[in-house]
Length: 271
Image 1 (spheres, rainbow, N blue to C red):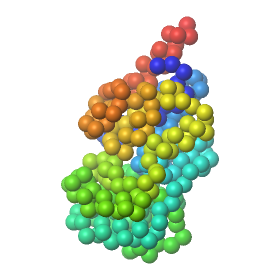
Image 2: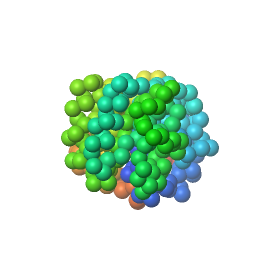
Image 3: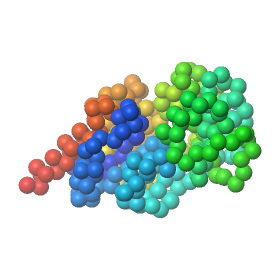
Image 4: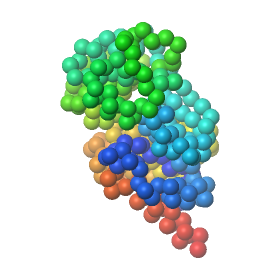
């Protein structure tokens, strides 16, 4: 690897440990990336505000791909928002209400909205959505731009939710299992790969100048864009088949390990 300009990483299951913490080495590694003019890009299904809570002091130095590519910023500037059709959003809310054990989150540009009364879920979902609002009825929300629908099911979304929502793809939507207990619905043209390509175009960066890390199916499109694509050791098998390289698991700080190796390589070349 050489001449890397962007390092792009998923958050949960990838950069973050299983307890949702960052490696204590991150700040030191970030400063080295900055010294080498390498832009760091968190790319997550998380809400923008949840992502920046990890990077509060440097948020205006980063490119951020939030809500699985439906909201993108570069150095504090909003560069992409992909709004869902409100009439279809309401249909999906009604359908999810029929799925036993499912909880739905409407991800808006300004906040995330929930109507669930499940206290365990409400505490859990706050790990991903820092700005959140509880409402009596999701279908009655006004004056908001919705960019993603997230569905949680503790029994797993791949089999309990996906089969019941996949037909909504006929409306030009994409229904994707984004984690073991999460599923996301967004406009079909939106994904982390589309968002990353837009960022690469803006910065005039090629596929050989980026490193990408991921662990689940919502990372596939962005992994496909990179020559240096890494699947985490804990990644879904489909991700391992697509990625060109493997990184140690998220609980071993695999992303940090690979970045450190690259930075050491740079030092060797430059001495």
